[in-house]
Image 1 (cartoon, helix red, strand yellow):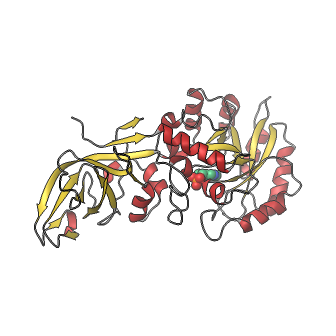
Image 2 (cartoon, rainbow, N blue to C red):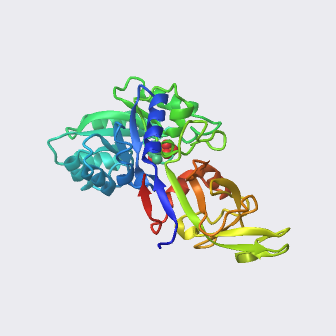
Image 3 (tube, rainbow, N blue to C red):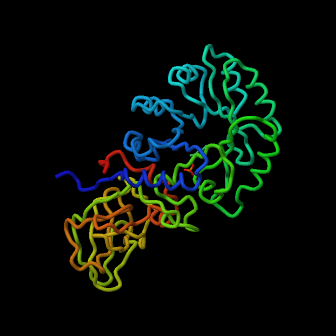
Length: 361
Ligand SMILES: *Cc1c(COP(=O)(O)O)cnc(C)c1O
């Protein structure tokens, strides 16, 4: 028997999440963001569930190629644009739309030999200070692009730094609106947090990522349940041993957990080499046979240990849900596990290790 750990990608849940986002932004077209191998889920595994999206947004040219291999003929957007001149040839060959965030990318376009002009998304740095033209330089970039025979339609794009928090999007929106006032072109503004929390925003295109995979972009203020999102991924394993601890006995490396009274613990075949966050420690929620209990002690490479006090009948072979949905339908949000490890659901999904077998259901 293989080691019992397994990840499951839930096609129906992914489809549901897309429909949920669609409901929140009924007039917008949706880029399903599938960068980082669909946030760790696998582009090939999510393709069918997201095929109702209006386009796919990603970063890597090889991921764009995989989308075309899957038969997707609709829009694909490169969120960071091209990295070097010859990438534009692939854009022409595969009909990829691309972000333009700097002068060097306009230079490359100006030198590109093509008879078919390309659709571009001109990015404004409205305050995030990663990619894009400042509001002051945005119009000049637009004018330069607009004069190029290599360029077809120009869409206007920005990205929010605080759509999930109290600062919100007002300042960035004010800068964006002022600088783009009379410029033609579609607007592409919202990530998941902006789509869900600022639903009134007029964005012709929205760019949800995390919400599609069933994680709340603004956890813990809101949960995935609050937004009507379902887990797109389950990570599950089994108990491969149990131990009876006497009072005063400790568990695992560093003896970081000590039993106050006699208790039973289960040893689970899942560790940080599977992508379980090592910064999780005693108290991190976990489901055993669908019942919520807690991790105890440190995460090691291949194992964690869990408190079996609420589960007298659990033992060797009992199902353990690290995040996602258990066999009896109980769910444990990836956001809660991430929080216990001092991180976000995004990182856990993306870090699912290559050694974990994945099935689609
Ligand atoms: C990753 C990304 C998104 C999606 O963000 P989520 O928070 O996952 O919804 C949207 N836009 C850009 C430019 C991105 O890089």
